[in-house]
View 1 (tube, rainbow, N blue to C red):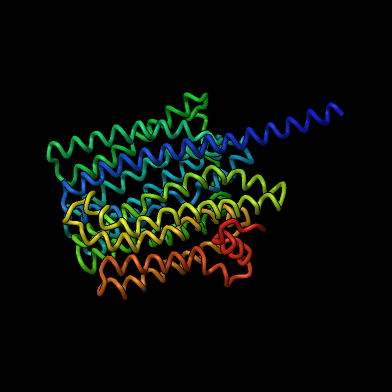
View 2: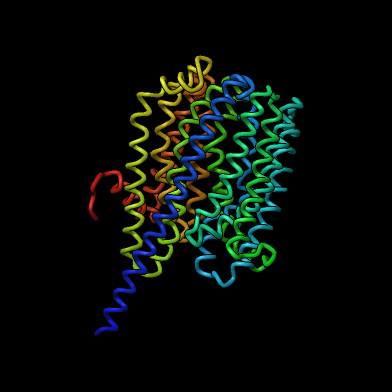
Length: 440
């Protein structure tokens, strides 16, 4: 009897310990994102005012173009690697080492694609080409994020948070210095590259301090094949997501001009500022959802439902006040030169409802092995986004792009799930999660 009670108490203790680990991990991720949000907002707005609408638009156009190729350097590996390390911690050196080299090769490939396509598309402006080259090369150093995935799998985000934030804060101060010395636009691109290098160094140091050795990592062709086989749908899905996020700025730049990109980018900067919230919460909760699936179907779906309810409530709490305060926020932060961004922000902010919902649903698709279905939805949404941008941007400029983004995000993250038998279960949970205090 005593042993049963002891085991029961031990089980409860482990459960509570796991819960507190998730809460603490989420707290560190939130602290990281809030610090970054505040600093990047202050410095970013300062840079926007310093550069002016035209150059700010040029920088964001180049950044958006490079970002389109992010799926090539990340290879859709992040959540998959976390899940594999959780289940196969004994094999972490092979998993992490293989992940590092895959991301490194992906980074090189993304540089070739970004720069090559820029030239092939007939771009002749040397400044724009230089911006694309520098910003693309910065992505190579993201291979070090394999270390961050290890910390995520162990629910120990604080170590990667500290390492990356030291680099981020130092880089922010250097950017302020660039403004004070009246540096040219290209200097800010070089500083973006410098931040990636500093983050990589910081992560390696944090990993070593925790008693691990980067030098023990090793390549495994078998692991690489398994990871890529599983992540392939996510790579294409990542392209679709990047089209969601960035094609509007590229199409505005191509169809109207860099100045309108600057105005639109100011609105999007505020609207997308909040996306750190679902990213932080899901990255902390996802390992527990994967673990719950192997133990209890009831607990598994209960966690997914609660995650959706939480993120839906948060997104509404952001969207409603932002709608009414958008003009004042843009005027105070960016100045009169960006005044048109207020209306765009009031519309674009509602995209967050479906972005948050997509984040909350992603662990379900991975756990159910439906990455290919997620790919199909995102490809459909991306194509829809391009079509709507093509139709709406000429007449409504940035406002048309914002409307196109909302419709395409709603279709991919929510509505498409209703028309596929394999996803109708998650659609039902999504609908239920939109109703406050719904009880299954």
